[in-house]
Image (tube, rainbow, N blue to C red; front, side):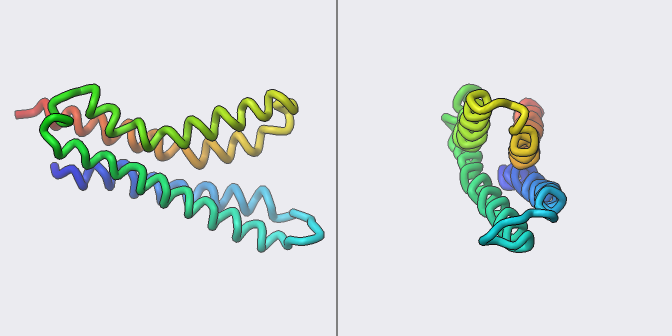
Length: 143
């Protein structure tokens, strides 16, 4: 299988799943939002737009998968692993650690919805990367 197929498996399906799941979550979470400045529709629209932009950023960061076309990277398990996971998972891990530390300071009881959102936002990409990496490594072992 071509490397572009693994890229699509790692990004396209997680992109679609993330957009759908987080959009539903944002609508349910903000349908009764009250503010002086924003309407619930504006907050929902901004949330969906930010989710879309985050997913685009993740897809761009996953382009490092194509480094596996280089023979030196493809034949080295560590470099293959790093090209597959290091750059794409760095923002996920950074955001999750930052939010977790923030909510430890102010109390985890107020963090439940935000941490659920982060899980819904990053979970499909993490699962997609792991799934496509395993399939790629199995395909390399086959003659």
